[in-house]
Image (cartoon, rainbow, N blue to C red; front, top):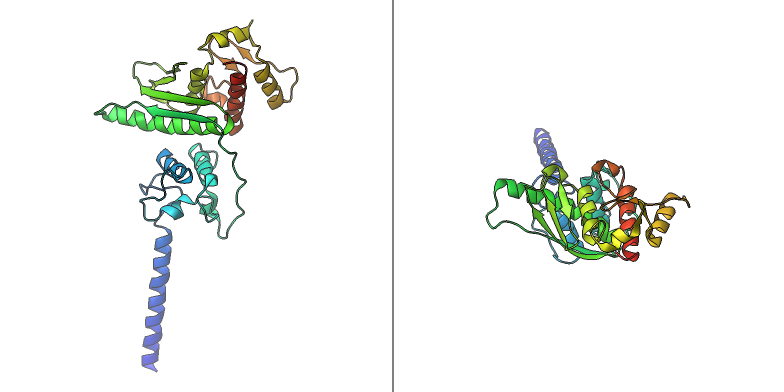
Length: 275
């Protein structure tokens, strides 16, 4: 009898170790942390995006597939990298996969990317700690900005991005360059604003000809604004450099994701007006 009791206790001990091992395994990765560095940021988003686009077919991190499936639908696709964007922008505070005890419905498919805006960060050969920090901030800002432009416009543009500490804020030029100076401006809202300058907003004769007495006169963008607002009397205001509403001239103008999307819709329509 005593022998049977000892065997029973031993079996219970083994089962408890097995269960403990399972719990530890499930805690060894963080949803969204695709590179396994303990953080969720633009580097993880980039890895998922490259995987979805077929640029790479695997990840190096041990729990990569589990960590990348932030939607929890059993596959790694565009739904996952859109959720990553929303998380990084703090539009959501957790991923569906983090909180679901059982499978949840597959999220609504995201819009197909129609634009082709690309960028390259010009980096120093032997960067300082300050420059490395700036490059990381700029990459995160540009990744998000380019995502919105490529999802909600049909615009094609190659952009060269530089870190120039002498620049007080940031600026964009029709020649396709964006310069960031002050690090507080290294965010996706500013990046989207500067992308619009590289496309022609405030930087071309076509733009200046479209602004008459402080009003933007292009047909397509004006109609787009009316469609967005539901107001048939809505007009776009502008000066030699900027437009409003939805110009993202200040970071606080982006109160929601819709403001980012509407910015893209307006700029895309401006392109049709001749920018």
